[in-house]
Image (tube, chains in turn green, red):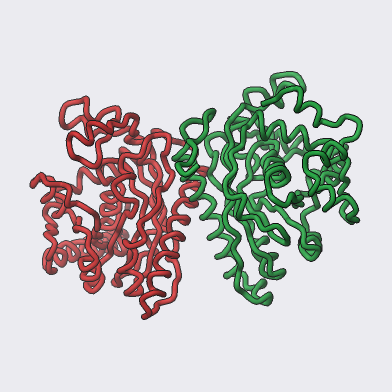
Length: 295
Length: 280
């Protein structure tokens, strides 16, 4: 729970030192690394406590299958996207940073839209995100980094309340990437994100007018004044990480469109199936899941 | 409708007559009775055309005279999606065909209900029965979610439960085409709003639904339903390699089962997203 001891880890003056106290492995891994994509450890360390607060105290994320994540990259995380503000990526990052045996940084591929918002660009790149192009992703994987992809894209973020946890068809580019670079794929199913901002209607026309991917109508947005409309509901989250799958195809097969689409669909269906199962087991939105029997 | 349509109409009606005649002639080892089906046709037609206003896409994909397996998501106490499929397939003008619903009906001990189901085209599930139907070039529909999905609570509507892969095994062995079929509308037409776990145990029945109508109202009205619009899509057949090795067959069946389940769920998601009008 949130208490005064937690506040000390915020590190107002020296965020890197505060982070080093808690996860020394992470700092030693990434402190001296040159990064061509603009990752800055200081910005990352400054923002990490906020997301950790969401993870531990607000959404109280349950995480399963952390042992499936290998200690050394490269690997490709593929998941269902959710939440109007895509905090699901942040939650996965916090989990892998704080609870994995060898703390790691996930480099998410983000859409071009973030780079058009003033002030957003620097924050997004400095916390480790990379503009989504095939070239960038290949370069990241060549450096044995962990790359996160949400193949639903922006459409997946703007799902309405009625469509929650109903996945939109995956863009198959990630399979092409995985086959071409011979990278294992790790499926991630996230429950909770679609309910933090109940999006009743999506007024696309208004969104287009202000160059937003969508214009949601939620209980808070756009009625309440600025910071208030950004408060999410305290929904219990669950992140389920599956075992990595190695695609046994030669790199030439990356251009076999039929095969790539088939594999992308299979991965999408597996995540959807897991979502259905997790939703069925959930007691309620705000109380989450029972402890597994063996725990 | 003008006079020029008359020859076509005549031809179609003759084809329909021939279908009825032939349907009566073929050997019916499982108790199918075309008279019973024709007696039920007006009711099914009313539900299909007027009450639920079913929009069915992809019926043309079904083969004209080869065997095929249709795999669907089940919903509700009465297998309405199956009956709607039977009605749609029998009244399809170009290619009227009979559909065999292969399902577990051993738990139904009441003779009249059981007989009525058998006569409408339901076949008790067994691997041998399935293979016999395939050998006779019949269309077969299965709903492999099993009985647990029949009393799915309303909150889980249109979320497909895990399929039983052994149901697909006979088809994969024979190399039969598998068509995924997604249905929306049924879970809201007969919403299962209460569950009676204890009553189920006490009655010894695997399913017992609590709909706005079901246990409360007197007999014919308790099978009523809301006039929700239905859409059904029969998707493209899946592709798989036909093998003779036992292990490979089983793996293919497991893989097919997961894939078909995913296809159905994805198609349900698409249908729900595209739906503009729920009722009326």
